[in-house]
Amino acid sequence: MNKEKVAGWIQQGFYAAIFILTITTVVTIYSIFSDTTEGFFRFYNDPAMTADILIVAVLAFFLRRKSRFAASVLLIYYLLSKYMTLSLDISSPNLATLILPLIITFFLARATYATFTYHRIERLENPDYKKPSKKGLFIGLPILVIFIFGAWFASNMPESLEVMKGKEISSITKNELAEAEVIKKGENIDFFYSYGVFDMLEEGVVFTDDYLIYYITEEDKTKSYRLPYSNMKEIRIKEQGDYFNDTIIEINFIGDEEWIPIYLSNSLGRDMEVFNKIKSVINQ
Image (cartoon, rainbow, N blue to C red; front, side):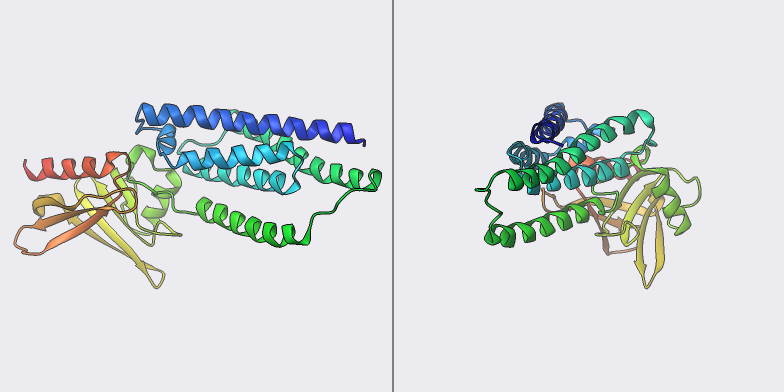
C-alpha cells in the first residue's frame, strides 16, 4: 500500500465529513427557521446544534490534514450520534435508513485507518519525520477520553429530553412504562416528560386522556400516583422556564389547599401545550 492510495482514502473521508456537515447544517437551519415541533426534525430545532456543526467542521479540517486524533474522534462521534439519533427516532430502523450511515461509517473508518497508515509510511520514508510530541499526547489523550465520555453520556440520556407527544414515544418506552405499572397496557399517552438523568424510569410525569401520572423509582421499585383531571380545581404557572430551567406548573385539587408542582421542559413550547390542555379540561 502506497502513500498516494491512503491519502486518497483520507480525502474521501474528508468528503464524507463535509457531506455530514452539509446535511446537518441544512436540516438545522430548516428546523430552526420553520420552528418545526413535530417528527424527526424537532430534534434539530435547537440553537445548541450549532455546536455539533462546529465540532464536525473542526474535526473535518484536521482530518484533511491527516490527523489521526481528529479522524478517530470524528468516527467515534459519528457512531455515537447515529446511535442517539436512531434511539430517539420512533420509527423502526430499516435498510433505507441504515444504508447511508453505513456508507458514511465505511468511509470514515477507512480514512481513520488511512491516517495511521500514512504516518507509518511517512516515518519509514522520511528520515526527518517528527513523532508526535509527548506534550501533545499528554494534552490530546485526556481530551479524547473526556470527549468520548461526554458523547457516551449524551447518547445514554433518557429518551425524554423534552416534553414528548404520545405519537413521538417509541414502543419500547411505552412497554417499559407499562411493565413498571406507570401506565396501563394500551393506555393512550398525550404527553410524557422524564426527569431521569440516566434512566427515564427514575422519575417523571405522564399525561393520559384522564390522568396526570407522577412516578418515581426508589430502591428499584417504581411507584406511580394517578391524579384524575376531574379532581383538579385550578392550574397556574409558578415560574416560566428557560433554556436551563424547567417551567414550574402548579395544580390545586378539590378539597386541598396545597398546590402540587409539575416540572416541564419549555423546549418547543410543549410546557404551554400541557398547561393549556389541563386548563381546558378544568374549565369544562
